[in-house]
Length: 379
Image (cartoon, rainbow, N blue to C red):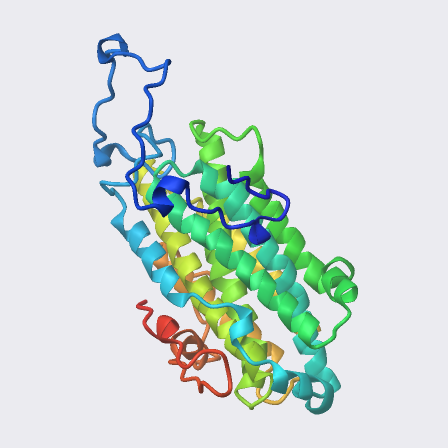
């Protein structure tokens, strides 16, 4: 009998065919088990079919194991679309980045690059934990959970990407990964995110209680609108500024694929928030909404001035901050809430192109010929 090797499953021996299969003979009929029960002895109870209209985003009473019929077909479309952006960091050639980092970047540009990586490495792990541990298990419709399972995978992929960049360039891993703890501008953003997101991680949270439900919705709104929808969306732009000058192009390309993921994460999260508000007859607290954006802007401003005490060619702290405000207003419109920064201008009009640019790749330069999956995304 074949025995799997649970200690080393990748090297387990392939089982041989049973004698009757090798001889081309039909398999013998199985002997009846002693434990089989006649049909008339089974419990007569049965379950009524599910009505998809009984599903809810949270606090649903339908069977979470039954995927279809869908009540939220848009959530399934998010899952299908996410799979079109499948990639790994090993698909992108980093050879030129090594030369750029060690021989072409200025000290100021290396400062920007390293601290963007240091912030992102911690943020994506925080995002992965928030979705996997705090949000996903509270969804009561499986089509929502399936997309969020993909989202957890994507956050893990992003974390691998940053690690791949750090390792390829020969950076001090311990020093880079610890910067969020020792650099106040990084720590402030991470601490604010933890404070806002930890509300959803409370083991005693009960979404049937109105106060707890409102706290969860505010936490998820921060995650979708600020953390992923604005901080992440804006967070790659300093490296994109280098990429646009022909520097760190491998890193920039990987960040483009990550940005495509993050755009979908934010759009999905905001759609879920709108759905919960509708189903639970809730509205976002205008005072809390204003305070959320004020705190987020203060953290982003501190971060931008630390990242760019002096401009690098093609990028300034003031542009970074103004773009954050502009994107924040976009998120507000998606939730039909007041714009937190009504006079903000689009300081980086090229940023949206980074999420939709078609990628043409040469077979002899990289492992793939053309990223059709990424190019096929519809927004």
